Image (cartoon, rainbow, N blue to C red):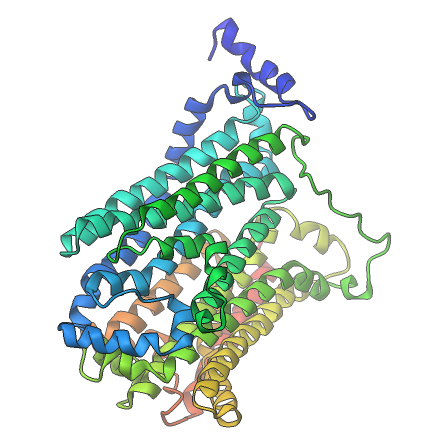
Length: 558
């Protein structure tokens, strides 16, 4: 890095990669090896988490289904129920056989491919547009590092992560007793989908001038791909099966692991990935450093009345996040509700999963237990949203954006309270959206929308106090010990999640179960509603919010 020839590599790379250049020269990739080693070291924990999570999905398919569907008759019964239900085809895809491998591919492959796509998007945007937006690439580019080295490294990191997932997936599926050929086809289909969306993320990083915008473009592409696959799989009887061929997630399914292993389908994602990567490098050579190909429009000269106070500013900062969470909860609730009517056929009434559902859901009736358990999970996820919304207050302070607001005649309590109010509104909104989706999906499947929609919305609202109490823990730390607020908030979410999901199965003592506020929420729908615990949870959440505001008033900002 200190030799004369290397010292000139950085400026030369910048000159040869200026906007309007016709290609990508070797100089623009200078320093890729050193930057790749740094990226791997920087992402060592993040990569392990992603790889473990995706491998666990394969393990669920390989080992879990053996416990649920133990005999060929059980599997054949499930296959018949699935093929006659277009809703299940929309959610999970087409089932092409009745073997354990075919069931694993039907149940898990589409979502494994979706998870691989998300992993690739976050990794690529992190090492391209996010680093460029924060100014890291400008510092790196002042050394002997080419302009396109970061893009090459991003693709390299995403490729390594997907290949690691591929190898471990093959191993897990093979160890579970599934055929090795089908295991390889399953893993390659998942990996190929991840690489396609890595290329899409690389293109979106050149189009958008912000990391949030780049992720938004790429995640929108995932949503479109999932929708095309769902419509194609569920609309075969109406001549819509061709739409599955338009989706990278559909390509993973069309490989048909464990049922024919159509290897030639893998040529589609490979070709799209190559074209996408080349396109990303060409676009990178035609834009200015620090900006995207699509320039943001200038805002109005005068702010609207909604930005006249800290409340409007807090809403403006978080409205995009709230919208994304609302859409996600709505779609997730819809998927949960659609499956509710057929949950007995899918799981049986005596299996281990059915037993776990009745324990978590707190009821004997399987359908109500399923809906109540899923509602509890929605509450936990809503708590995660609420914590992230509260921690936005800490992020504004840590990044120095809170001080300009407080320079104006704005009290600290007003500033902090605005963010807490937005977190409250957002939590209610996402839970109502998820409950509405669940009620609509379940109500439509049993032709009883008028009863099920309000019933499920009520069950969702019952989760609000518990979710807000978890967020209030993070808020209290923001007020009293701001540097510990992030780990404290997410630790609270993790503890509640562990107790809620694994507590009944591990037969933890009631004192341990009571640590989680979700233990005290009535098991709805189907259970007995009691308002007393909800009042107590709400009161504790308000008290912790007051602690946050008092702490903000008496400590130094920043």
